[in-house]
Amino acid sequence: MLLALGSTILNMENHILIVLFGVPFVLAIIAIGLVFALQSILLIWNAVIVWRRESHSLGNMLTLILGIGVLLIPWIDGWAGRLLPQPWFVFFNMVTDIVVLYLLFWFYNYLTVLVLYQFNRPKRNQRYVIVLGSGLINGGDVPPLLAQRVDRGIEFYQRQLRETGKAPILILSGGQGGNETRAEGVAMREYALQHGIPADHAIAEDQSINTLQNMLFSKKLMTFNDGKQPNAIFVTSNYHTLRAGMIARRAGLKADGIGSRTAKFFLPNAIIREYIAVFARHKWAHALTIASLLILGGLTVLFEYHVL
Image (tube, rainbow, N blue to C red; front, top):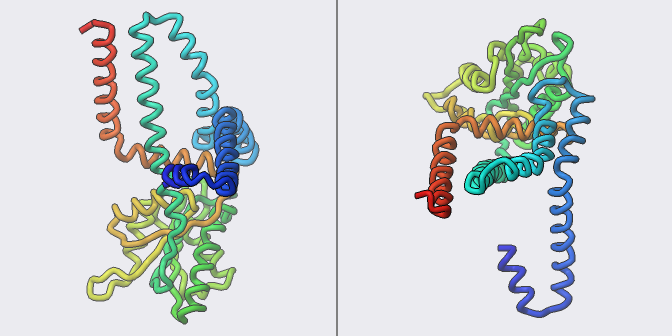
């Protein structure tokens, strides 16, 4: 669409339109080029910020690993060029190009759908609002990330009550971790009660240890009329909404998701982690596709250098 629009504007030879749309386009291309050129620095910079503010777990080091990897690519390419015979060097470049482009292609698709999912606006006719847990701090306290999820659920609760007069029931879902003194669901329910939710409108689901169990166990707490599933949505962090929606479908739960805001410095790591999790769900299909592409590429190289 953008290419067709640009071509149309150029063919019209309308200088005002060309300047009006051309300048922002050129600036956007320059900005994308700068980000691409500085991507390793930006990734490592983000990793330093996360390192200072969050735990030093592998999940919080993904931008660091990726940034170092981007920096090493030219060195690895130069090393391969010096050590490998020409046919093998061409094959090596082809393999790396195929794998990187394949991963980027699916990341672009994942990111596009994730962004579109943020525009989801569920109807104000929900019977249940499931708030997914994310872990407690200091043994039993609700951390800011989890508080934002509960606040998002409370916001929807209050808006639906105000607009329709019908209050949904909050299901605060999360079990007790090994380093926690109480279940997340209990702590989340207490937080919700402190912020104005009536006790009979908040249920603690305190057995789940992952997102799939969040959905399954919350579903068991719902009241079904004539076997028909009641209207329900779930609340989680914005970066987690897409995968949580996929898991809800696996659990047989007809529920859309809404996301709470996440600190911007935390988003790159979180999005990369979610992408890896979504990609890994179909790891064998992806592995078969990549292997097929590599075989075809390898045959091309062999024919080109008259090996076959």
